[in-house]
Length: 462
Image (cartoon, rainbow, N blue to C red; front, side):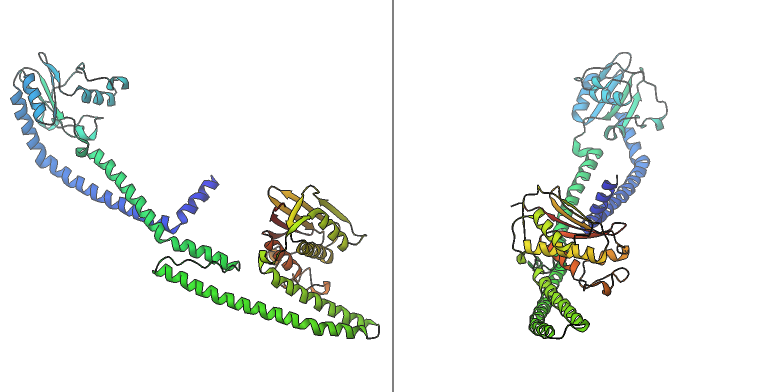
């Protein structure tokens, strides 16, 4: 039920569908108002003007048939006019359209359905009641269809015969109900054509939406196609211009950051050499530690800018990923720290960038060691067509409102992970970039206790 409701909301949430529905409701409302007004106008005039004329005409037809009624005259009358004539009485029993009577009798429940499909043949006449009052002559037969039931008049001759006059086989183009169904079908066809035209007109909105998603992910190629010269086409062109300017700004920022990082490496190396010459002591150790943090910061900044290129920055090759993770974990985790490893050795060779995967494992494990508490749980497994790598610690964890910001550059939750614990807030950011470059994603959640970070990416078996 919920899935159907969501699908209905998605369909009705489209602007084109809502516009077509609006036009359809408006057309139906106008049709209903016009039809109702015309029916009342014509219906009121029928009783006051037309029905007396028809009743007088039927009296003349009854006089033409004679008393007792002449069947040959009735046949000639039926051939000349679109009428059905039925004669019931002590001397003459004749029906020009027995199949219409059978259909009427079936709808009134007087005949089983199978008898209505038989070839036309004379049917037993049900008992007829004389209508002595002229106002009852034009009463429609209950259950009859609209085309024939609106005009069914009877007359009684002097010798006791009952004459019943009605419409004969009416062509479909003269039947109100058939015309109504045809009109409804034509309305639906026109609505379908209107929807296709509306969808074609609103197609640029889908292109603009897809382009906005690409631009938000940093993918500026290809640009949004400009399909027309109307307002939507001009909007797509303006968005492309804005995206080009943003791209130039980001490229300039990236080039400046890379230049600064490269230029800082040389004086940083000289400063470290000079620090090595200083006499041993707390000041020398603090200086070397600060210089080491600066070197790591510069390396992380350079790596983050390289990974910003996505798949183009990777050097994929078939790797035994379980063995790579095991080696990287043992290089990071001291022997006295409780460790739970659950690595699927049957993954087979996986096409990844081994250097970037070592960086990802080292950063996740180092983050858990720095801010969490043992035991440390590390799992590598395959779920359907995804590769899942999970690192969990049992430390204080992260506040729920801060989970969404984990993985952003230079972000550190102040409550549990202050600057005194080390790091500059680029570890999880680099891990997120590595996962995205491999076509995956990084997800962090509160494990109660601790924090669990999961990397999911599509399997790429070599």
